[in-house]
Every structure is written in C-alpha cells, then in structure tokens.
Image (tube, rainbow, N blue to C red; front, top):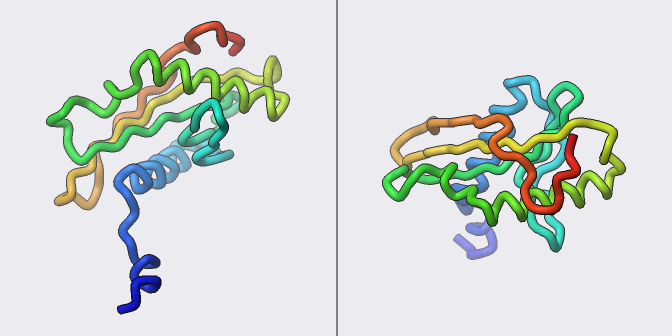
Length: 137
C-alpha cells in the first residue's frame, strides 16, 4: 500500500480518541459543544461547551492506565493558570465577560488498549480560576 494511502488509515492518538469520546459523553449529558482544540498563543482549551447558561471549559486527560498516577493529577497549578488565561482570552474574544457564568471541568479517561470502552470521571467545577485572571462570575 502506498504511504500516502496509509496516512489516511493511521489510528488516532490516545489523546484525540479521548477528546472525541469526551465530546460524545458531554452531549449525552445535555451539553452543547461550541469548540474543540481552541488554540491561541496563551494555550489550548480541549473542549468549550455550554450547559444551560454556563460556559464550560473542559480539560481532557486520557491515559492508557493509571499506574503512573491518575489523569486528573496532570491538571496541576501551572496547567490551571494556562487554562485560566486561555479561557479569559476566549471570553474576551467572544464578548462573554460579564454576560455568562463560566467554570472549569476536567474529564479524566483511563482507556487501556484491551478495552473497548474507557473509564470516565467527570469533575465539574474542578478548580477556580487561578492567578490574576479571576474575572469569572
């Protein structure tokens, strides 16, 4: 098979599979997905969703196992600050500051190779905005 044809059949990365699964999971919970992989120079937000009148910035962490710690442990203080800055930039860019509530959720996925379905943990309001960017309602 030609190399360029094989590139179409590449398996998705574990992280990408986890994000796609998280989007489906959130839709089933009644969320509306607004954006995915929103990148700026300040950072990337994996999923931006809306639940009722709240904008939800979702960080997705996917691991093949939890032998090296839980996926949620990777959302440390530094990561929270980057997410806060990126979320604030998103809200400014879309004129959302002061117009709606916002929160940060974390979806932790453990998806071993031998399982068809992953183990999912959804932590709503996982952390408060950190640093000097506490302009969320």
